[in-house]
Length: 522
Image 1 (cartoon, rainbow, N blue to C red):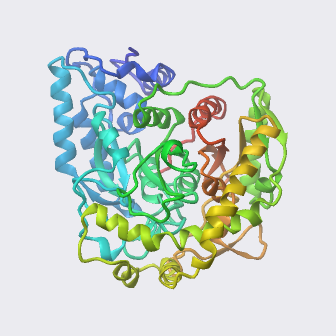
Image 2 (tube, rainbow, N blue to C red; image 1 turned 45 degrees about the vertical axis):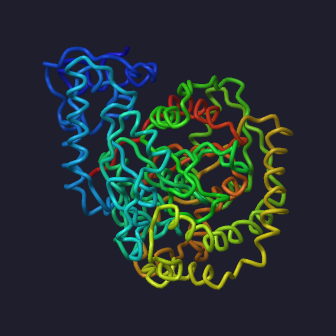
Image 3 (cartoon, rainbow, N blue to C red; image 1 turned 120 degrees about the vertical axis):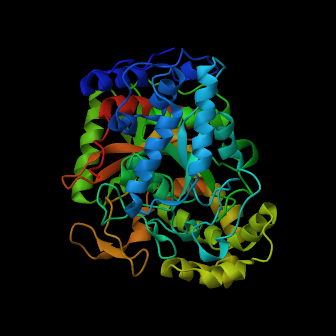
């Protein structure tokens, strides 16, 4: 197995060793017995914070790092960065106890599980057995699930340690994570700006080095948008038509918006880390980097139009680097996409909660709380407006056509696009603009792109992510670079249903070309 540098005498040596480890086989720590307890020079606090998930697992497995030391370092980091409002609950005692168990197993030469000692954070709409699941809304503050959601349980079974539950846009109904019930999550790269949402707390915590990895949920972009705005990686797994096509099955264990669209998704600072989590979730070997020379990717012009100038410069520079590496770009659009998508999005998101939320409450064993109770106590203005439409079933008349007619047509449009153009995936900027300032009055207000007229934050930021969500296809967002103002920019790969591993393989190769982002200055 790859060895973490045992005695890093300098930061340069440490970083060189880290890079070598990150390039090594991700399965190396699976089911292995450890070396004897490490007695060399301990890693500094900064070195621990810099660890990726892959590196942390390997370092704990080979004795270079004590799990308890690492967990304690991250908990201290969380305490120091409370002003980010990234976390809603912290399981300090449980995390320390779990870390001590990992160290004891390693020191007595017992086999370690695949993610042994890996600290993670979990979005607070995903059920967890040790901390409440509040969805960031007043009515659910006392909800305590009896068991972990299935995707979370797979990570825990593999040895991951849950540090905390993360803040989110209230009830996951938004893309800013400006939550007036729990506090606005702040972007680690600029505390005055949004981190994206609704999985903003998970993204902010990972970018801020509070944890190396975690889980979010995605309905219309809620994993990928915050990944882009916080400079990390996020995977929206395949949903397809559910059952056999759904990669993560957590129905009844996540506070829902839409059973047709919702999915849990892994988030981390590198594609390699997301590939590791995905492999554990799916019981498969991690993806390996794809060959870029001759790789065909679709570039839909409508997804690249109307971009913020600074963001456009970053994504065009990334595209040029990929072209130099041999990627072949096929310029082809999806005719009628926006109009077709518009007939689906709100019809699903504003009608399905009427049945889905009560079904979740029943499955979780929550008594005495109704959908009306939740709606009545919503604190954020934008979410209150959405729940007004839900309670009035404003989109009920459009629902059947959305599901039976328009969504199949959208899925066919995407399938035809990939087949007709002979492309593995399509490439586009995850969002049309970098992070905008926090709007504490509206929760999600308006802004201007390039000095133009004011546009809606929600509608603009989901423009590129929402159609793939409605089609149920997988999407991988990864960092493309920083604007001159130091704000992260994301680029996304969307592929056919079931192409998750292929997207991760391409993302791994992209990561080698584009390189990592510098950490935020905190």
